[in-house]
Length: 437
Image (cartoon, rainbow, N blue to C red; front, side, top):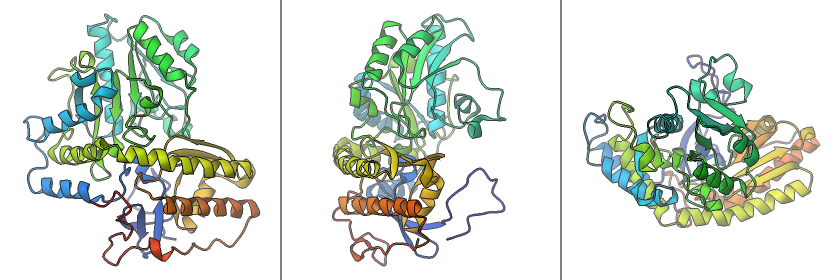
């Protein structure tokens, strides 16, 4: 495997020993030409697969026109992007067809934007005294890596040594509606949570939790903010994960898949009563809503508007759930949690760590990444076809058996001919996969 130690880079990551040089669809190739099946999908940023031809075409066309103006000037793709986002996502929020959009670049920026908006709304509209607004968040959350957002984390590596942290947040157990209710007081302006906690290991709350949050926040005149950076835009078999419980949040934070794995794009979408409180000078972003980002995001939203990817995630998710449950029954996994085409799996402690499993998968041609000591999450591109998914799950079982038996035979599995890429890098599965144009 490749040496991924780079002298000029600060050691902020501990990557697996692979150096990727090329990618297409559901597969990547390293600098030695070895082929791997990607089950991480850039933490859902690659929901449509690597280098989707439609998204690449949209980017290439825009690259020849204009890529950045800053928000000091309007450009011809900005309103198109906002309108398309309102059409696809607006009706899934409490803002409906009147929703507003704040374009940003990264997921963390979107969450920070939502926090600023609900605080100002709480002060200007609700009458919460200056500097007194509080936001309720959940234990085990992952909202980003700014100093404010790591302050919400309970993961030592994310927060230790980075304080002091911003005040104004109250943490409660994820999925505990009574704890949320107990944390609410007159200073509470919002509840901010992931519908499904991704980095915590794809934790799905009880079915009554999100409907209960919606009722509680409506009754108490509190904003309900859903962080759908990872869970949104098709991953759970629905456009938004909140649809699983028929809940419409006041604001939704989007990112990752919105940029199609090509450019960073994020946004906050929702009620105009809240987002309209952000007037000129109160918020902004040099790169947020730039023409290139808008062009790619519009193309990504067009892909989602057909419902094809959501349906594929739901259908493939059934296969994923069935196979993972079988591994639990065999004692190879301690637990498996699935929602759509997304799973968190916990190793039986005696088998090893999540890192060791990811290394075993890598040696056999599959890419995944641990989230916690004994947990990894699986998030294949939504374009994956069933033979690929079955092959990956076969390799997962083989890797778990190797860990159990301490098997030294860990040679990479041969990739079948019908999964090989053509010499020009175009995937021969393209007629089966929506990664084709």
